[in-house]
Image (cartoon, rainbow, N blue to C red; front, side, top):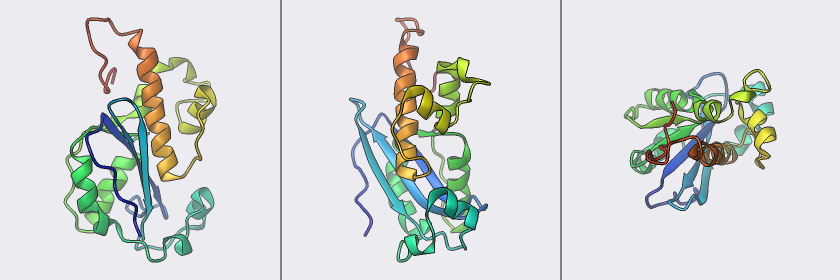
Length: 190
């Protein structure tokens, strides 16, 4: 049984996927971190049947295999309901992989390709913490150490929450760098 999707309006939703193999359409887990108007975060995630075989590399990376997704729905079964939530607010991803995976899964499973508003928390992190360039970088593992974040890497719900926390922390420090007469926007300074 799939948990109920969060409802309501959010400042933004961070989205992350895990894939079964090298095919970006092979989504086997999707996670959302819905950030409300007070910066509270509500997490939602579900396993999906990728409809393709798992590669041993991916299973070792995230711990998801055929037995984990047994009886889970395919992407096409949840996408219509998910799209209704996602197309109403800005989306955050940590790198462009998640957007490409959603597009690929839509093509592979005959779903409408979305026109969604995406922001990249890697770009936001680069603007907020330029000193990390060449010093660990702006990947989630590096940001976890640098920002002292608590999350379980390679779990879609946890990685989505981490991307949301990166944006919230960046907003905190960037607010002092933005002139007071100009409000900070989620996409600043892409």
